[in-house]
Length: 335
Image 1: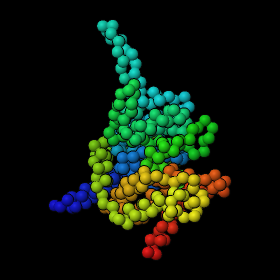
Image 2: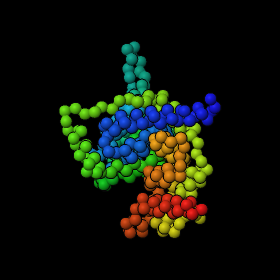
Image 3: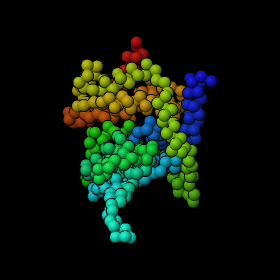
Image 4: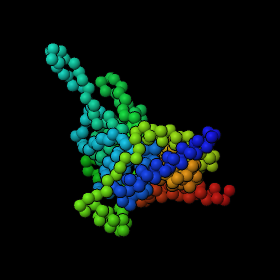
């Protein structure tokens, strides 16, 4: 069997396994298929996800279920204004031995896990938020001058309430850029909400079951990076990212008028990974240009900022991204 045939077989097997994982998650999370796909995509790509939605929409439930289904050691931190970095990273304590000798012992914080849920991350102070920067980028932390490795794989799924303003600290741009995708959790429609209340108010609820192990997830992450990406997809990724930068020569007028700063190279890297995950989750062997358009909002929306004038006019970033995507799609169709 050739190397290409081996790759195809591995991708097809992984696609079937992911379908079982999605079915197991859907037992606990009803009617949020797109949210589940984006969250799984962030894990498959080895990245982190920022879930934004109102309370009660299943964000915490999703992360807990993912921990079970993906076979990851999970931990949860409730971010509050008085939370300190040591509460997340851990700290050294002075212990006295039986012989009277004293020595420092490091007590690991909740960040030493494989899947960290950072609940309401914008409620913590910038000092505490910054404790996650090194962990999210380098998968290790430095405490008392010593570098300590985190779990493998290591992922952060953070939640944020979009309407809370008092007692919150907006995430800095550098930290937002470390999230692979922004996942907007919306209200369910009427039929879905009916299914939810029936399924969750009885005597017993469906339970999710483990489908992956941590090692199998690591293998899936390596396989994803081996998936082929066509030149047309790569070109569209570059066109999309660069067109969203107001100072780029290819940026359309509506971007120049409404955007103060656009996405950097990390956005293009994120698209290269997430379009592969999108294809995998859809049971396909390679991504298409349609996958780039579908991943535009989740990858770009937290890596851009509107100008003051645009915010005053009520312009939404999603509108700008959609216009850029539509323009590029039309140009490709006309070519």
